[in-house]
Image 1 (cartoon, helix red, strand yellow):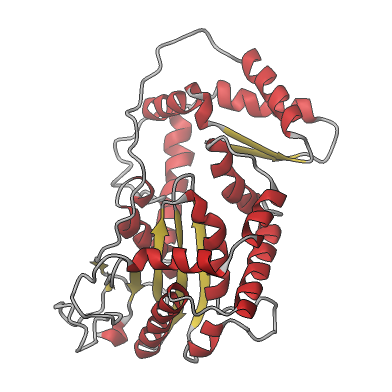
Image 2 (cartoon, helix red, strand yellow):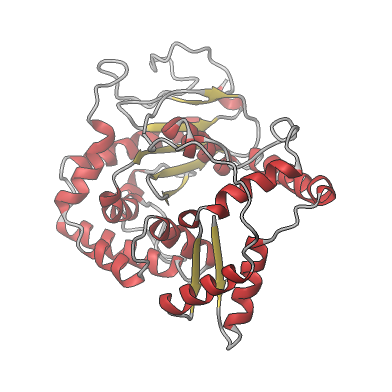
Length: 364
C-alpha cells in the first residue's frame, strides 16, 4: 500500500493527520462499495480491455510472472461478484496491520520529519487491539515467459516484445537498456538517434516500456500499427536489438546516449506522482533509500558489460522450438506455431522473450 502527498505549505502535520485517519479508521460503507466503487472498477476494466496497449501489457504480465504480478490490475463484474465490504475491510486490516507493507512518500519534506509526523498521527488513531486475519506468505516472484492467445477486436494491432527480470541489482542497467531500445524521439519534432529506430517500418509506432516493482521488472518495446507484416518486421527488429545488446554490440557512443536518456527520463518521470511512486515506492517497501541522486548515479555507472549481461537474461535458456528465431504471427505460414490462421491476440515465445500481440482482422 502506498500513500503519497506533495507538500507546498506549512500545514504538514494537518495533511499527515488526515492521511493517517483514512488509513487507520476507514468506514468501508456497504452502499459506497455497491454504488460507487464497484461501478468504477468495472468501468476501468472495460476501458482497459478496449485499449490495445493496456491490454497487451496485461497479457505480457500474465505470461511473464503467472502469479502475483501476473494477476490483472483490472476486475470485471464476474470476478468481483462475491466481494463484500467485509472482504475489503479484512484486506485493509491485513495491509495496515503490518507496518512494513505501508510506504509513505512525500516531496518538500525530509524523510525524518515525515516519518516522525506519520508515526505520531497513526498512533493517535490506533484502535484497541483486535484479531487481524493473517495472510499467507507470498512466494518470491519468478519470471516464466510463455505463449497464449486471446480474441481481440479493439484498437490497433499491437505487439509487446520484452522480458522480466527478478534481479534488483539489474534495475539501473534495465533503465539504460529501455532507453537504448526506445525508437521514439527523445524530443518532440526531433528524429530518433536510437539504432532500432531505422529498423522500424513506416507506419509502425513504437516505444519502450520499463515497469519496476519491488521484486521484479518488466522491460520491452510496444509496437502499434495497421499492417500486420510491418508489425511482424518491427518485432523481429526488436528481437534483433536484444540479441545485439546481449552480444556486446552497443558502442561507447550508443551506451553514453542510452545512459543520458535513461537519466533524463527518470528525472522527468519522478516529477509526477505516478512516476515518483513507481520509482521509489518499491525501494521504500524493501527498506532502501529513496534518493533521486542515488538512482541517477546507479544509471550513470552502467557499463557495456552490465548492459550485455541483462540483455542475455531472456536468451540463456534453449529455444522452445529448436532452431526457431522468428516472431510468430497468425498469418505467418512459416511460423511453426501450429495454430489456425485467424484474427486472434496471441503470444509466441522464443527463448524466454515474452511476445504479446493483439491482432486485427487483416491477419486472418
